[in-house]
Image (cartoon, rainbow, N blue to C red; front, side):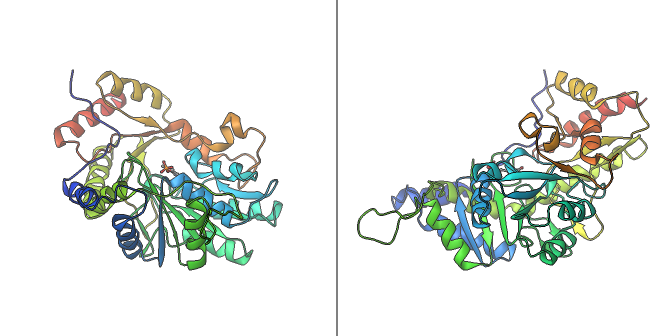
Length: 374
Ligand SMILES: *Cc1c(COP(=O)(O)O)cnc(C)c1O
């Protein structure tokens, strides 16, 4: 049996240990400390936002963003439909109600036209949450313009798109509040962790306050609000500082993997996950989409054949409007017969995009897939 080929696994470089060791040597093996402060500063400078707060997860960052928007029980939040459930679960943590907005075909992300329709039906949502799927920027300026016109805050879920740019600007800068993730499978990892980003200093201060148990400035333990234990540890932040140095290197390798698939599949009834000409993804995951007219092969068959060869692949995120837990939530599409997210889910497959994949290994993956289209 060949060695397993992963979808996307952590890649450590050694530099991470230097920062961890510094934390040990100074005995700052605690939440907060120099690595946390520096990681926040380094990441904010890289992205081009003024403030960052390092947290235990991307989900925690999204939760506090939703809380900052003042979501209360029964409030509507317009959300990306084709995404991981972590994008939208925090709305439920605050008792809000997700309304899902369909995708467009140019990026697979939230369709600005469907968002306009959602605003017609729900003129006063508390927030809009947009995710940049698989490292591909959404049509962020269009979406932000619609939110601004309605005076509704945009939350950008950039968990998968760290380092990607839209019209020359980093993702994570378009939301009033944005979230990053450093989970194990993301483009850089701290083993687990996330970050809240904003240009609003007061908002970031509030996030730090909530994330450290909402301790009032008093000599004794005093609380005027419910708090959370959401802060990143100084050890974990050390891993992040080491990883950040290699982010561009990771993106270059991911892009190479994507371009290799694209070239190999150019004569097959298959396309790759698309992006607009004015954006540069981070190519976190390469995904294939089988042409609609080509009905002889399903993504499940390809996934099974790859697994048989010890190769990991994964279905596209199952859209939120098809999830049992959200069966009673509304779903807004551009017209009544369209379901772009459901269609992509039915024909798409995420391919091995691990940056440690060798040329030979990727050639094996490609040859197994090509075998289905003879
Ligand atoms: C990974 C991910 C998250 C959550 O990040 P965690 O750090 O795992 O909590 C949120 N949204 C999307 C789109 C993700 O892929």
